[in-house]
Length: 343
Ligand SMILES: [Zn+2]
Image 1 (cartoon, helix red, strand yellow):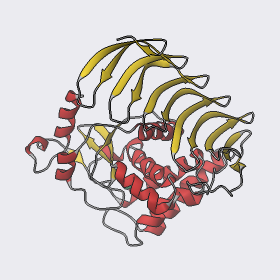
Image 2 (spheres, rainbow, N blue to C red; image 1 turned 60 degrees about the vertical axis):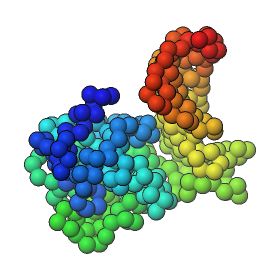
Image 3 (spheres, protein in one colour; image 1 turned 90 degrees about the vertical axis):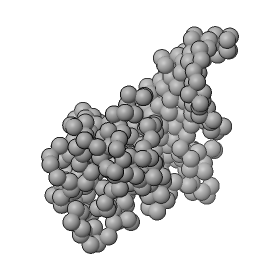
Image 4 (spheres, rainbow, N blue to C red; image 1 turned 30 degrees about the horizontal axis):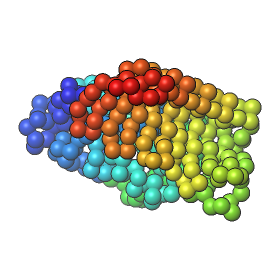
């Protein structure tokens, strides 16, 4: 982690002396604004939110290409952008920016569409060419975003929501006007629909689900393909892949009040593969699942206070040696047997 910190500090040139002697292209700000490089350099943080990591994996997967960049959270930049440093490619994002954006647009497709746009810059090699943004590159990235959003189950309106709500109709030197960008997203979206006609748009429903709202399969196909269903008893919502009428593939679950409770893999209706489970007490589990239970090597259990227990899970039980990392950074060894702490 410390080595990475040094890497990242030298990655951004600017007033700060840590940041000199590095080449970087910072021109792909989503809204065509100038990015304050000093601010990035001063305030950069070194965590990647797991939701974003998984979203990135999911987006890259749809392109058929391999991920060729790092993802970094960078608070207080109020932005998301693609950048490079000596051929190392980065996606830098501010979680608060995503939250704000999702509040404005009332859909979390907005954040995903911007991530996809920035990823599009990297996958299409824009960030290794000299110079920053230009209109053609922006439109290519928008088209990629539309292409991916269709495959992930967004409606066209959802795929366009970020640009629709936050950009202006006026072109800047770096970014085309809104109407042209909306058209580019539509082009990518339409191309994907021609290639993959089986994907159905998930839902236009707002994140919060009202009790009087209809339950059962409310959008898409909840038997085979992609769809959204609301449990008639608990009002929990599932958005994602279905197979033989069961949650199967990749999906997300939300509580009745619209909070994300799980994101990751499913197999015949149960958590399976990699996922993140958000517990109601504020703790979080990141790691493997099998048959609906926590199961996997070196899983991370992140307590609400920031302490992290890294340990193997076997059929839902903590087993063997683990490492407890306190939020202060202090580490200690621990040992569990059948989910009970021995020392
Ligand atoms: Zn861009």
